[in-house]
Amino acid sequence: MLVLLVVAAAHENFGREWRRIQAEGRTEEGRIPVQLRQIVNPGLRASDRCVSCHVTMGPGEQSVTGSKLLVAHKPVVHDPSEFGCTVCHGGQSQATDKDDAHGDVEFWPEPMLPAEYSYAGCGTCHSALGVPEREQLRGAQLTFERLDCLACHRVDGRGGTIRPSGGGMEGPDLSAVGLAGYDHDWFAKHLDKARKEISGPWKTSFGPASEAEREQLAVYLNTRVGTSQLIEAKSVFFSNGCLGCHKVSGVGGDEGLDLSRAGEKDPGQMDFSAVPGRPTVSNWVQEHFRSPLAVVAASQMPALRETERNIGLLTMYVLSLRRRDLPASYAPNDRVRAVRLQEREFATDGATIFGAFCAGCHGPDGMGRRSPGMAAFPSIANPDFQQLVSNDFLRETIRRGRPGRRMPSWAEISGGLRPAEIDAVVGYLRTLSGVPEKIETGPARWVIAASALGQRLYASSCAGCHGAKGEGGEGPALNNQVLLGSATDTYLVETISNGRRGTAMSEFASPSVAHPAYAGNEIEAIVAFLRTWGKEKR
Image (cartoon, rainbow, N blue to C red):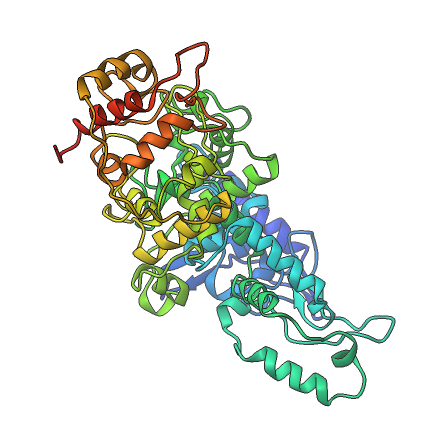
């Protein structure tokens, strides 16, 4: 017993790694005292001892030098010496051994975030608002750089320096201006000052900008929240149609799992049998994006057609979905606005909403998508379709969906779309197709034909794709009350007659190897038969 006590005392006082690290620490006055250090924040109900090794992260210790672990935290929005480390980075706050503190032990449910995904920790508290899809975000960044705003302003460590030619100056750092806020009348004031100056950077680096360019600059400034990588990751997420199946913070579809706290997965409860490499949450998420069916049996999620870089960004976003319960005094404005005021985390233009909700099924170009084991998703930006439907038809389709199919009623489900957002999607679809709205002046229902003949023709030529009872298959379900209530007879006749280019739907007004040409009265008979499935009988 005495030997055990002596060994334990020696290990505690001389063998601990944090003691060896602190012994290397120096200040101008000499060595630092070797002692257990910790940060306690009663307001956050958090305390951690990471600063026993990472001494310079603690309050008043930023001047300490020594080993590579004794390097001060790079500038961030929050002071690490107040908030501690595990609030953002994860890990086990009370531990003092490396593996325990990082959570790299079998029992710990909250391991530390990998270094390459460290910005995911911002999602623990923050919910960045109004993030656009990736093309718009990239365009905003390019506009900021093209207009030479970096001549005077620093963003994420770039810009804001005097140039050898004499241009540029030290203007305000804009890295977190989206959080701190800014004067939205800045352009008029900048322009007025530039006109009054005779020379200098105001003359060489600042000039007029069009209204479209100013809108892009507003997008860029609003998304500068001190974590540009996470904003880019969120933008990629909003470009892949993920909200079409998954909810985040109560917004999205019901087909898939709720992802609001997906970043809090316990690795001890996960199956890593199909995941190469270390059994970590980040590796599982990456592999799931690459091949969902291989990682989760019977998964309905299609494999993403993304680059490895974008898969990495998507992984970062998923890991950011942590949602820590915060005291009111620490709840950031963006989180309050998202949770309590129901402000959108995505931009509400048509391109972003389509990318976030629709692109997963209908493709980023709206031309449809096929996934193994599932029925083909319709090509809703197809010009042949767009020239036959009104905006009201499109609105009603989005609003009420397709009962019995995977298309939800976006205006009626919890977490769906608002009327203005549905209008924005309709407008964007018109942009994708390049076809303006066609207004029908005639009656919606005008076909008078023998439905019995139509039933025979449907069975021989249509049932193979649309199902014997119109339940759908390779083609859309036609025995659908929303479709039959919204579609005019002209729409149905023209679709059957002319088909859809780029799809399996052929034109039945012309002969093919699969079917003869149908006369006008025969096509109208098929329409009359389809109408027998509708609630409104004639």
